Image (cartoon, rainbow, N blue to C red; front, side, top):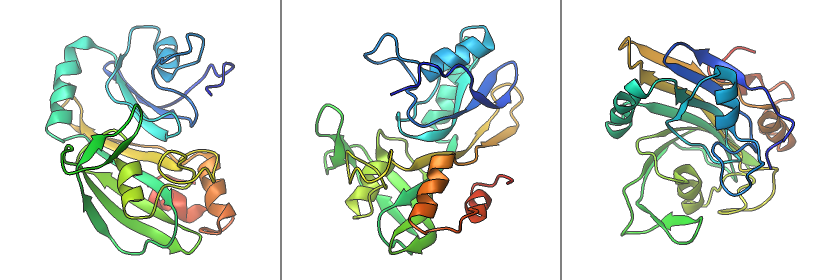
Length: 232
């Protein structure tokens, strides 16, 4: 559940056209059923003191980089970047078990329920590139890039190879506080300057604590921050 007392957000980058924030876990991006629940969209609009446009989504449990448009004039340009797969997203994930080799999961996804998806031949093509950084019997720290952006893509693809996200109650086990997925970095072409814009976010405390609890990393967790391309 979103924290009703949460009134501030961490701004990663902001200019006249865009605003990037570091989404905390457990906060929904856009209002769903509860009219009183705090949403990230509300908080960003409150910060900007103007209308902002939601250009992407992250699951409630996922943390990390997400951006909003501050001008309807650039939304079509941003949409074309998504369609042409020119917006690149990189994630950090804690997966179950020992996953020690790079692999590409190219498996179509289809909806099989109100909120659930699965690998099915009649689904839409989905491609996930998995790069293990630390692999142990207690779990593995993965660096993941997406070639496509389907709903629940990482969650379903990892579960399909028997390495579900830690804490993924829908596709694995409820053995952590949330599905341990963090949007670590997003790269795009700025719609006004045409320059490359790359924004990164450090993993939150609960992600680092889960790595320590499983003894995947040392107590300090510096190697995780290095993978995320951010400074300690």
